[in-house]
Length: 334
Image (cartoon, rainbow, N blue to C red; front, side, top):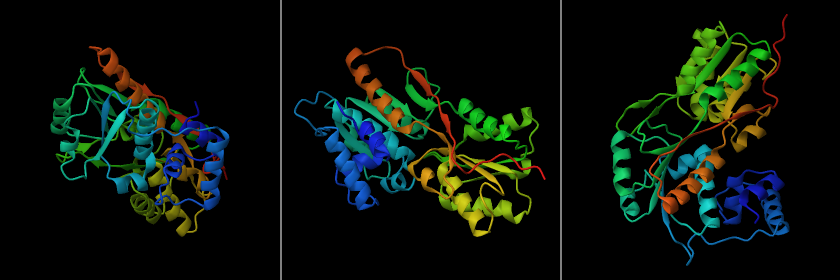
C-alpha cells in the first residue's frame, strides 16, 4: 500500500507538504508545478486516500499539540510529528481528535478518547490531567521520569556528538552555540539538553566556546538577533551549531546582511532538517531529527497498547543523522 512517505520520497518534497496538498490545503505556500508533481506522483503510485473517520474505526485517539496551529506552520518540526501520527491513523481507521493547547476548552474535546498522544513540553499538572483522562498515553519529544508513562524522544547525546565530531573533523576548534529556551505552562524553564551536551563536549575536547554561547528562542528572529550579537563583538567563532534550523536560518540571514559568507567566513550547522533547510543559500548542513517517524511510531505503539494492554511502559530514543550540505567547510589555515 502506497503511503504519504512513499509519495514524498518520489516527488522530492516533505511528507507534511504531500499530506497538505492531497488534502487540498489552500494555505500551503507551494508552486503550482510542485502541487501538480505531487498529485501526478500519487496517481502513478496508485495512492488510495482513506477517510480520517471510518465506519470501521475501533478506537478514538486524542492528539494534544503544545504548539498553536500558527506556530506549527512557522516551525514544521512539530507539524511533522503530528502528520506522522495522523497518517498512521488514516491507514488504520483510527478516529482522530486533534487539539491545540491554544484552543479554548481543549481538554473538553478529549474526555471520551481511548488513548492520547501528547506532543511537546508539558508541566507536571498538565501531565497529571492527561493521565486522568486515560492510562493509554504516550508523550513525544519530552522525557518523563515516571516509569508508568511511555515516551519517545531523540537521542540528543548521539546527535550532538555527531554534529560536533563533524565540525572538529573539519578543523574547527572555536565553535559557537545558538540555543533556544522553552517554558512550561507553570513558568518552569525546560532546559535544552543540547546546551549541556555542547558544553560537556567542548570541555572534554578543549574547545573555545565560552564567548560564543547564546540562548534566545526557537525562532528565525531570535537566531538573527543572537548572530548579530556575535557579529557586534567582532570576534566570531569559525563554526556555529544551532539548536534548530529556524535559529540557524535567522543566523544565516544576519551573516548575509553583514556581508559575511557562509561557509567561507564561518561554517553553520542547524538541527532538525526541516523542509526549508535544503533551500537556503547555501543549503544548510543539519542534524536530521526523525520527526515524522516519531509520530508514526507513537501512533503505532498506542495502537498496540490498546490491543495488548501491556503493564510496562516504553522509553524509546530515536537516533539522528548528519545531513551534509554546503554551509560547512574545512577550516582554511592562513
